[in-house]
Length: 329
Image 1 (tube, rainbow, N blue to C red):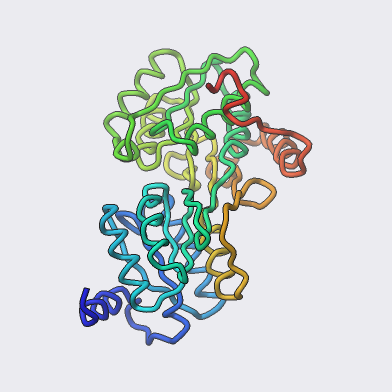
Image 2: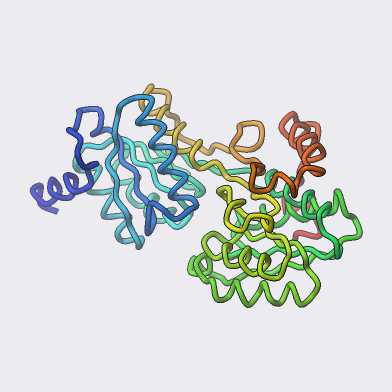
């Protein structure tokens, strides 16, 4: 791309109403589809805002919708001289793998995806730890003894949610009947609310009165159907308790905001390192949600969940990986 076009691209990404500083040219963040999705992208934005508040440093931003746009955006930023680029989601793995090799002096941080290159930090979460806790809650809260799990696609992060949930349910309700479904086989499943509606109706028909939705945007359709039926849903990634007050038991949190903030802070302080990082309960990278919206629902459950969370964080209670749990294979 000609230099003038690169300059126009980067200027277009600047935050409005604020003069650029030299430090701002060190950072960029690339969002998928939107910045305000109520999930991963919005959480990453919160991490960026925290970084900006603490340091006064801004970052370039861009929103992409395809792998080709991701590649082009990273290349433009790198050509402009930006040295730290942050992306969200496993869908960027291929793009990061390509561009990181072209610009070995640029630091790339990929949240919730993995690329093994010397200039890439891959941040993964111990989803199974958060899912174990909400699984405990589901087992304790179910009146019918039948609970459901709906995942978007059977990729590793969703499988970790599934397996942690299974273990948590069995820890508090060994006799529980578990119903598990997946919406599809590609990234489109994360937005397929129609499929989520239909699948939730099936679970309800089979007796499920609590359902955990690890399905991104489509998961809100699961919560909606469970609430309409007078049952309980469990949210994911961000705190979704307020979506249907009184009908969202809790949410399994992935602290993408923490991951984004730490990556930006480390780059700013010169302590950024490449490699794979895992964030779990001990690192406050995952958690379960409790607030005013679900206080009455979890009042009797919270002590057991808090004890389990402390034991997992302290290494006294192990959540087993999916490949070691027969029920998760």
